[in-house]
Length: 254
Image (tube, rainbow, N blue to C red; front, side, top):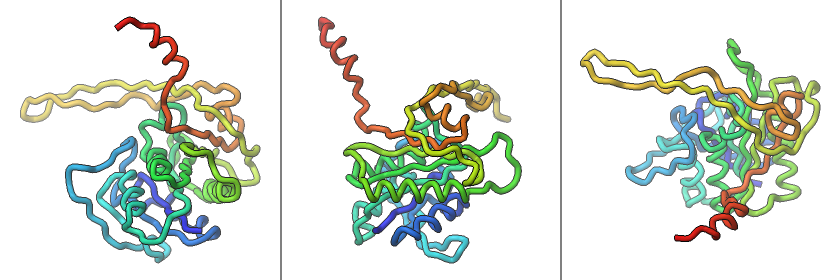
């Protein structure tokens, strides 16, 4: 079993280290991650410039590869031949914040796992629902164990074609988890605001800010599961077609 571990927070992120250490219990691990933070980068593929790759080491002294590309690039490059040995599974994470609802379209963590599925390799994205305003280092141990257990099930049972798993883990000790729940995407409520400013030369510039997003806590959703202390496992499909809408649109006259 050969597992590729990546993230969108950069090769030095503690969540990546925790994930890699736990995945080593399942087989050979190759770590290939961005050399900087790409949070909220979405599904980026770099086509207009060369990409650099350098060898580095993680905090535990184990080898890794770092690239100046986006998270999706850090999956595409090894799967396209940089790594000669076939990869059986890609696990992306551990993101320090949950990726829920519409977050999945913004998330570099999730879209890195999607890149694996596009290439025909099973993909899992793992995120930690850390408390808002948390001070100090985060404890990734529970999320890493959850990632291993989900990976074990994927290895044993496989996944349907075109499906990526989006896993979100409550910020709890392992023995405090209520269990594992298969969920659907919930509704993320964004409260973004545009902050318009003027630079010292009199030219306008803008920050997208606002309050932290919230969500609608419904039963059966990723939000609801986390609220009740469950690990949320949401199967996402790469086919974004809305088939019911197709029937309505066919009635249009062009």
